[in-house]
Each structure stands twice: as structure tokens, then as C-alpha cells.
Image (cartoon, rainbow, N blue to C red; front, side, top):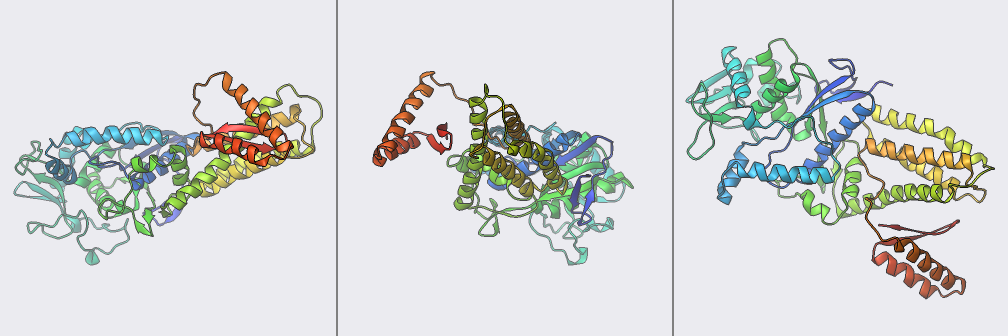
Length: 480
């Protein structure tokens, strides 16, 4: 089945036809590193990490570019408030960004270009726009003349005559039109600046992404991604300035946008003051749970945040992890078993191929992770149904079915970036022996109907991070 993805520009799902066979070129707008990343930032990063992972699973070689806007009004204003050099904020928060995205199991991009490292490319692109009549200079500022670009508004589905200047659209009496936007800003006292044909200054916000995406991927690259809040004006402006400079060449083939993280149905953002940083959330929830939460909804859908929602995600994630743990337990215990096998084992083996096909079908349909996750739960449930069957015999065929099932669950979960095996920690060889003793003591307590003692052992172990599970094959333990 061909991968179909929803193109914001055409407002419909389209088959993925890449510029080069077997290769995908992909640019995703990154963060402005002036503060700790919030959950909305993480949602975009995780969404496109999953898309990248699935493309690679499907056999594509992916060139993945994600930028840092490391010079910006927000950075300058924040550094002035803190009384520190402007460049120290990006240095500090890029480091934080990598630490926190690493904890969420986000694969590193192929390249992370920064605006300040691409000033010559930015100036060259602005010059091309001035020479072609798409831009004009006034007192050292260079603006894009929006009305010179006839398709302006197609991405955001807006009529240019009905538009109003809004967030991050600069308002100036010098501009010919309120919708015109800055490509180059003249230097102001105390602000960073670079030399240019129009005097010292710095890039506007939009031009950097055009310059860097064209530098690393070239015209007509495959996928341009970002949050829905970037559709207008940022991505609309990127198309105008890029295609204005390129002439008849297409800038990007597919435009993908992830939905917002909301709180009480309102977009989470720093400007609204209703955001939670990734750091704050990771103090309360394991990174694997947060990753699962961000994966559990379709990337284009809104994702409403609450502690209740994260608690539900935690419970769901633990069910999956317990299923994998149970498979490992049975496989370990049955390594030397032989002979007979129940018909259910053959049923499980036959279901594996269909399960992977169902997973691919979900992901081929615009990367529908919500449906893909269901496949993992169905596989886990079917495997555990076999394990808990009274007729279950851990023979060679049954173990083969369970081993293949576990391997498939882990492989599909890895495509989603979800770890289902807890990090290994060094432990004394005495721990398993002590656990066997405690389980034996608890079993004896239950046999003599001393349920208070039995519950006390279970509860004390739970308090120190060890969970007891009573199964038809006996009591087993695991770490939380």
C-alpha cells in the first residue's frame, strides 16, 4: 500500500511521490531557544520523529533537517531582561532541548542548521528577491511585497484582501502594505547585527527557513513540516519568498502540520501563559509515558493535556509493558520445554502477518498512530490469552509463537519510538533469590488465609517499586 499524507496546501490526502526514488527530503521548523521547551514543542518534535521513523521503516533514506532560530526578537528581549549577552540563551537552551528530546527518545536530525551560521545564504536570498522586484528597501530595512506574489494565501486558504496583520507580522509606517513582512532588519543600538548590502542588520524570522531548507535540500524537496500555528504567517511567507526567488520552481511538495496541545480546548503556548514545560512534566511522569501520550492521538488532531489524560496514558503504557514482560517471563521459564502444542499457538502465529499489515495500513493512512497503537494492544491481548489458557503448554511451537509476537510488538513500538522494556539497572544476584523467598512467604500466608500478611508483603514491595502479579502459572514480580 502506498503512503498517503494530508497536504495542507491541497487540503487533501495525496500519495507520497518523492523527488528521488527511495529518498525523502524533509525540513521541519524547530524551536526558538530562549526558554525551556514546553509540551507543545515536544508534540511537534515527536510527531515528525514518528513520521521520519516510519518512512525509514518503509525503506526510504531520509534527509531530515530541523533548524534553530538562534537570533530573534524574543531572544534579544529575554537576554536584556536577564542582563546576559544575547548569544548565551541559544547556547544554554539548545543544550536543554537536546537533553529533553533525547529523554523522549527523539532521533537526532541529519543536520541542525542555525540562522546565525547561514547569514551569507540569507543575504543572497534577500538580494535575489530585491533584484526580481519582490522586495524593497527602506532605510536599511528590506520588506517582501506580498501583493507581487499572486498565489499568496493559498496555503492558509485566505483572501489577501481580507487578511489583517497579526501575530509576528511586523507593523510599520514605512511598509507599503500592512501584510508586507521584513526580510532584513536594520541594526538597532545594542542588538546583534551583520554587514549587508543594506547596512548592518539581522534576518527577519521567515527568511532563515527558506535559506536553510534550500541550502540543505534544494528546490522541490519533499516534506515541509511544523505546527498548525506556523501555517500563517510563517509558512505562507516561506512559500512566497522562496518561490519568488526560485521563479517557476516549486519550493516544497507536501506541507504537513501537527495539531495543538490544548488545555481546556485552548492552545498551549508561552504567549498565553498556559503552558507546561517538558521538564516539569518529566518530574511527575516517566519519559516513556510522556512519549506514549504524545503518540496516542493522530498527529493532526488536537491533544488535550491534563493530569488525568497523562494518568490514562500511564495506565495504558503499563498494560503494554506488562504484556511484553509476561511474554519474556514465559519464554524464559519455558526454554527447555518440548512436545505438544495447543491449536491457539498456530492461531497466534497466523495472526502476526495480519497484525503487521494492519499496522502498516494505519501508518500508510497519514501516519495514524492512534490506530497503530491498537494493533499493539490486540497483539498483546492475544498473546496473553494464550499464556493464560488452561490448555497452555510451553512447547517449542508455543514458544516460537510467543517469541515472534514479542519481537513484533517491540519492533512496531520502536517505529513509534515507544520503549516497552525498562532500562536495565545493575542489581545484586541476591535480589531474585530474595524475591523468591518473599513470594513463597506470601503464598504461604494466602494458603493459611492470612490475607492481612499477604497484602502487607504486596503493599510494601509496591512502595519500593516492585509489583507482584498473580497469574495462572504462579506469582511473578517486576520493577515499575
